[in-house]
Image (cartoon, rainbow, N blue to C red):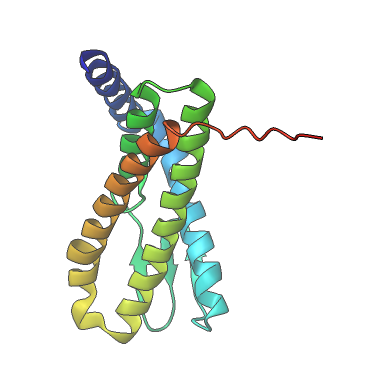
Length: 165
């Protein structure tokens, strides 16, 4: 347990050292935010929203949204990755679990961005509630559930079927 705690702590310190480094903030993070806004804008356009994406901003004639640090899902992804990598399991399972969990959280974040944009367009009076209360709770819940899933998934023993001729 102590080894897990120390490994987790070390990985989280590394994560925060990276995301607060000026190189990451100036050269990498803006591009990652742009990817989020571009994908979300594409999906919104499929729903007829006529949006444009420029950097981290998605805008239309009806509403605009700017994706900032904290709304990019990097912290829940890092938390989950640190837990998975620190957990005593087979390395391949760890890597596989991290990629699956990050893909799920990334996808969920795109859904969050799209839903918040639509909330801003059609129900602007509840935008802050959805942004701060509902989606933050849902992200924490999903991240916790994914941690439990990962632990259970790594403990599964593959079933071997024997064919008798």
